[in-house]
Image (tube, rainbow, N blue to C red; front, side, top):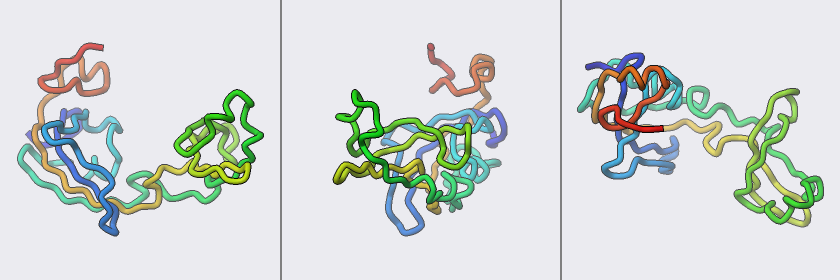
Length: 166
């Protein structure tokens, strides 16, 4: 069976930046399983997998616009720690995430991550860590199958054989 809309696809992967820095890989024996055509993986990789079948090995170069988007400089901010609610200030350290209004798109929210705290200032970014990066994927397709009725109605794959309980 070829990969097409609504196929349940299992694959292993390794992904690196165009510069060769590995950023992620699937764990041995634990393929990623998704329902194709439902936006559950980045759009560029989803497009690159169309028409492939179990056993295929796919190399794909994905531009930022089809991955995690362009890097938006307006989402890199320096914020005084004192603007955070007093009860949250102790948590404001690298890795802390919070949701706030987009600085230039009124009514739009962004998840920001604190990258550094120095001299009372929190350096935060609302960009995905891979925003602006071209990604190189090496994928091996393990299985392609028809979805179960439950998977289609729920809009996601339920794992091996379609079994999963919510």
